[in-house]
Image (cartoon, rainbow, N blue to C red; front, side, top):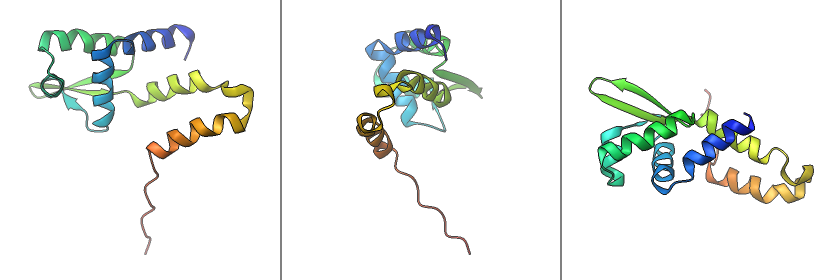
Length: 119
C-alpha cells in the first residue's frame, strides 16, 4: 500500500457515519450484511448510506456483491490489514519493548480459537 492509498482509506474513515458503517461491516465478517440492514441498524437514510458506501468502496475498504434483490457489503479485511501494517511497520524504530503493548492489545481483541481435537 502506498501513501495515496492510505490517505484515501483514512479519508474515507474520517467521517463518523462511514466509520460506524465500516465497524459494523467488520463485526459481520465474513458473511457481510445487506445495505438495507445497515441502514436499519445505524438509522441512516438509504440514499445517504449509498453515498457513504460508495466512498468506502472507492477507498478499497468495502466490497459489495449482489445476492438476489439485495446487495451484500463486506469489509475488505485484507485491505484493512495492509493499511494497519503500513501505519505501524516502522513502529518505535524496531524497539520491540515499545511496540509490545500495541501488539498485545491487538492480539487480545481476537483470541485464537482452540485447535480441534484430532482423532
